[in-house]
Image (cartoon, rainbow, N blue to C red):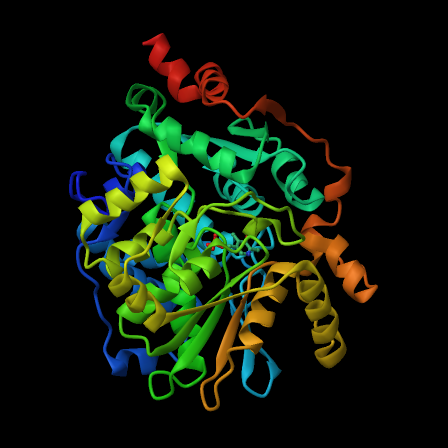
Length: 470
Ligand SMILES: *Cc1c(COP(=O)(O)O)cnc(C)c1O
């Protein structure tokens, strides 16, 4: 499989190079040259098969010849084995026609473990193969960082550097990052928002000499491997609910548009998805974009669902590329306007194409808490605020005869404060994290300044120290 950039000016690469590149050299995002498809018979055969088996089958065409099939299968299985549930990503029912796809049974209690556990193994394998060392960098609104730290800690060939917005992540999220003692883990509290953190990461990737010197590798969901690792659970859940005979809809709590884009990929691969519903909190750039055709950034408002406190949804560029008929120049022009003027209008035809596949709804703080309380009363299940934003959006998009699956993206104990407010209950952390509060923290506080972060990395990470010694 070969990959092209959404801005049309970067070299065409294979899977392994896209894995290590993250962002394309022209500032775009890599997408596959063509969409592989699965037959209806094959999709039907997925019903009630182990998650890892389905995921490996879905991922294989995107990896192509870069890896032996048996090795990929073993790696996907090892990643899934870090989850505490025998079904890896189980489906539960909350109403006659409404289901939750539980994605939070991994080591850091959020859906990002699904992709990150696989990504770390793929990256480590690739570095060993090429005899190189890398600096893995990521901006996080909380969950990506924890998942990346957990997946990359102690790995031989990698330093991991995580930037998070100071005092804008939950205490559990922060502690999951800052209490990891491994030498190859570096956690930076940035004085700014998530978007500031993401902008610093983008700047570092655009800085070619620095990027080369430290072997910069991205783990944000702009990395194609992250997206592809999330496609498997759409197939697994839909097949369990009767696909391909019966179409299924999905509602996805959305921030950076990575998870829901994986659902779009599943649809392009042949999974009969009826609607893909984008669910946001009050940071609703995507809802405004769909309703008015105006993609325009606004200030970020902190909420009880911080992993969705985002005003620039990076992966939306991948959807724009499809909606604009894979016209890289058109996408580059839009992104130029976003950078210069803070926004752009989506043209009529592409907007219609997006609206054919996607719906969108936002939920405010009161609605989020009310939903947690209501679901708890009705089912005895305790959901987290991100999942609640999804459930609320899904409830306004239920269609007779089409099962709705809402992605449950985090464990309630990760966002205990909001859950307590809504239900009066204190959700308990799973056993493995029970002593999190007592572990010592290690963190470096830095200004929202690319130069300061580059200096820290150059001084600290082994990739540069070893180059300097040679
Ligand atoms: C990251 C995250 C999201 C948003 O996912 P995107 O792929 O960025 O759209 C939603 N919920 C939780 C709990 C997350 O960690």
